[in-house]
Amino acid sequence: MNENVNGPQAGGRPEKEGLFAAEEGRQSPEPGAGASGHSEEVWNEDTYSAWVRRFGTPEEAAEKLRGNPAIRLRPLDRHFGDVRGKRIMNLMGSNGMKAVALALLGAEASVADFSEGNAAYAERLAEAADVPLRYYVSDVLKLPPEAAERAYDIVFAEQGIVHYFTDLRPFMETAFKLLLPGGTFILRDFHPVSTKLIHSRGSTAKVRKHKVDGDYFDESLEAKTVSYSKYLPGGALGQAEERTVYWRRWTLGEIVTAAAEAGFRIHLLEEEPNLSSDTFDKGIPKTFTLVAHKP
Image 1 (cartoon, rainbow, N blue to C red):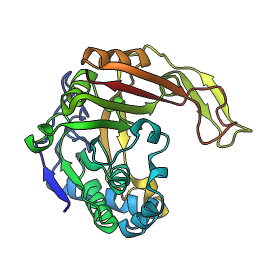
Image 2: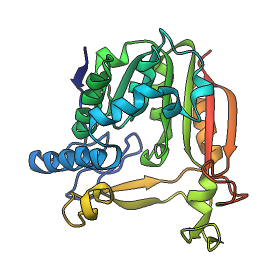
Image 3: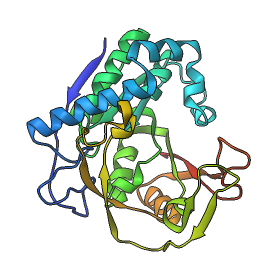
């Protein structure tokens, strides 16, 4: 049986203890913020439609997942190991694709994410795949008791996560508290060298150009407009609801230090090239994977 649990939501201006800080008069579309009824409804509809456009209907996506769920977990699958019977929480787990894949492999999977649109897609995906899924619609820093008080073997988050937090400490502490003693935390995200330092242009390896024009140690917040319009039919520019959030691009040292200060014992830090091509962005770190344990 699939569960959708609505947890507390928070909103407002950027604060050190929060995440997904919102622009004046607007609310963030992600965990840590609320939204007006109409705007939130439009955003959730756009989100669901975007995933259908990208992955197909939940039924179509589930059929593909059932064929080979492990492939959806790459390259993190080797860090998960045998997941049968394990409780796993995917923080900011979006459309539930990874969580449903884990459930198909025998895990007891949970997701925490703010978006009702993400939750709707994930729940229908799990139903079509015939696996249980707990989906908590909540600010990940303010999880409802039924999520926060469960003890997990693995907590993970990936791809486009840490820049949304104006302070990494609460996020790392949340992951730490969710884990059983001996549990594993896995974080995979974009490498700061590629997001803070290097600006790349060109759509093919042959014409790809890179320029070092960033400030790796810049600590300022960056206003970003977020929209799912690129996944909607014909781009649907101007039709998708847009929101402005503030990003904080962290250095690799800041990320690892925040994990250590939360109490984690660092097991592994891997810096990775462009894993989809042997020539594209050659020699430039594109992602990193941090694996840590709760003593």
